[in-house]
Length: 157
Image (cartoon, rainbow, N blue to C red; front, side):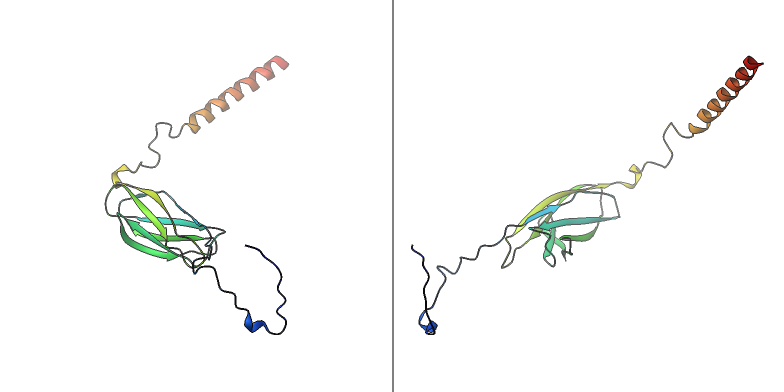
């Protein structure tokens, strides 16, 4: 196929340019990243996805669990879409974030895992065996400092 410059002058209506095919629009590739989460039963798991070619704003992201649509949201100026999903039982489940594509961008999807912990798995605050060890160490250091001070003064006399 050869190319060249055509001077159509003022009679440009005689020259019509048609696309080679109706499908010659090249869509930009997108990447969708879903994020893992850890929550307790009864809490909301934040299903989160990041859509990029450059961060893409205003694109609809749908969230699926076991193939069933549970919610959707539009991406913000940073390309992030979130959806709060109420957890009902302990265990791990996967969710899929899916961008269907549009006239400029290709479709993309990603899968992530949410670990839902039972409420009885909560570690009580301060339950470790090392609790309050700072006080005896401080007292020990203070006693050693006092002894060295006394010995230093006696040696000086």
